[in-house]
Image 1: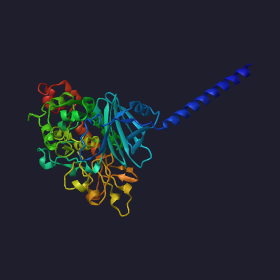
Image 2: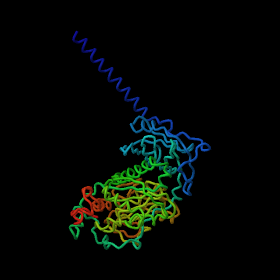
Image 3: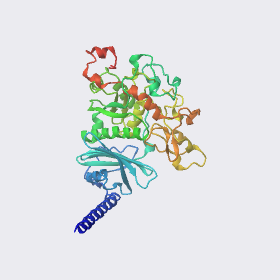
Length: 472
């Protein structure tokens, strides 16, 4: 009797194991089955394309609804996500990263069956915004209001460039000492001339205040679309930091609408920086209230470049007021990340910025040097997020921009993503290590404002007045 019960128990265990194996196999099969496609087109003759201006960089666009249930299933690993962007442009996505946003999720992944590419989405309830980049093109998804979304295909070669304000336009500040700094010095070994100019934070988190104009909010289909876009920008920048080996992470300190009408990207930047010119002056109080190290203004492009900012030019907290501001006018998380890179001291690539002084001699973006060798494959033509396309264009070809920062310890397609700091090469092929630059400047940038200071008033607190750690 005991043997019979033992055999029966064994058969039950085997049956349960077999059923479990079947369930796991079914889940694996379903996970490899793409969804039917998350987008359904709305007849544009009946529904206007809200929030979409067919600028020169836009190739085509369409208005759709989104089945967020399919995105949720992909987020939970139940199926491959199929983004049916256009009839002739569909991308199957393997979800790789999921992070919480203020009211939803940030989802990123890679296009399947393609040599390279990236998909970044924010799903906040019914609102979906994102960007898809593949060898076949660049596509954006934006909220149009009232349950509608707009998909656009973008021609990257027609997009206006980002442009940082040059040194001769900057207010006076500390001398630029980058060329005198040992490029291999560690953060722990750095010292400053004055104790009060030393960083008070480790730089692992940098708080950002994001403000936006009424025109930009309208372009995003209202406040829900605007807030989702801000989430996309913060999370995308952090992803670029993470995959590039960069230590700090951006934290959204606060977001707010400002009563301002944009004029020109550079003009908007100068007005944002000024605290007493009558334009957006309330932003400075918001910055102090929310202990924001950096301030970023999102505008609807009227004139000027896609973005503008200034840079920290030496390891000093005295740049807290002139190097902490940036403007993104393109509505692109790529521009937002690029301009934020400038706030940390980065320049463009050496081909376009070789004549300018940098905080460190390797604080550059990178264009793959192998692309210019005889018989180099087309796949060798690429650049990192801080680099311009001029060098490639002058050579007669284009170089897609990777959503990564220069890091010579990493590779793309077998080629290094930068040039080591100690490399003696000069000219366009010289040192380029954005990763090391940001990791070194982060303690200073992250110390522009301290959360501990929010309990004090800069006008009444003796601690603030002494300037010991409240840098106002």
